[in-house]
Length: 178
Ligand SMILES: [Ca+2]
Image (cartoon, rainbow, N blue to C red):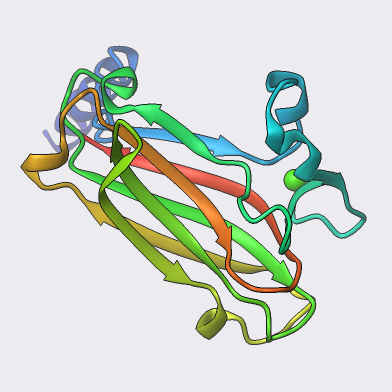
């Protein structure tokens, strides 16, 4: 009987997989390893921040921010273009590397309406970096309240360099729970 139950459970699981009914169906993932962005955004002002770097966290390319180019490559989209289902939570992750502990930057998640912030949260990288010249993962999340789930509102995620020193960024990912 146990064997039959096991076989049935396996068949149900395989059926669910075939239907795409995995437990993660309410989760969307957007990733950027900085390897191919220049092919996608030739006209972006941010293309010049994508640089070839020998010790990249992935591949050969990273995004370089400093006191001139303060913003990393950014994720930006109207909420309505991401999904018809209201967003519940956004989790942003990225790997950063600095040459000095005096570097200052924040991982930012924002929700804007016509360019004006409705909600804005940041996680400063400085307390998290133990060793300069090593890659450190930075995370932050934003729980969505009902008043900023308007499909016309724009979700943004990026690194904001607030200091005078170089901060490298690689392997950004945005996870959206619906
Ligand atoms: Ca990379």
